[in-house]
Length: 196
Image 1 (spheres, rainbow, N blue to C red):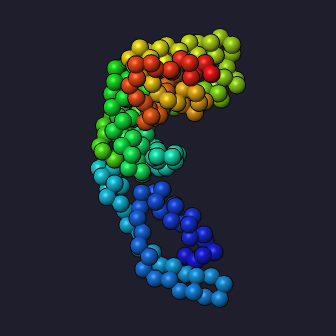
Image 2 (image 1 turned 135 degrees about the vertical axis):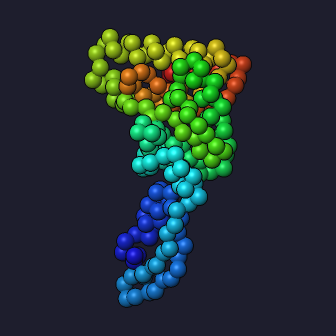
């Protein structure tokens, strides 16, 4: 490919697909530069493909990338850490606790680098509320308060409830996502954050 193709974008696409590259050669011409890359699968992709199929990038955050995949014909989400901040271990720790209280997507399995959870079908809470009836909106907000109250009772602060539009999905059920910033505290503020 050439610099006319946008080298940075090419490298981003390669990484997003869980491949790696090595530049083998380059040559400058009149108004562009040509590159030859060798592209191979990452060890992570090889590992994921042992159990998963149809792996596609869904979203990229500050600390990780989320992929959608199939596990035995079921939709799952795979969260991969790309900065070494131990967020995967934090999130899996709290998902295990909160799943016992029917909070969050069901954690299926995990390693130090990634975890696989059920894929939550639905829409973000704000999008849902734009077309929901008053009764449906009240019901969803009550369910959110019930979940947050449970978390506060467990001494778990999510540190994300002041931005609920990004962290609550409404589908068959009301599901909170993104528990990577959770921590135990004697004074959790989930209810206060959600009200704000």
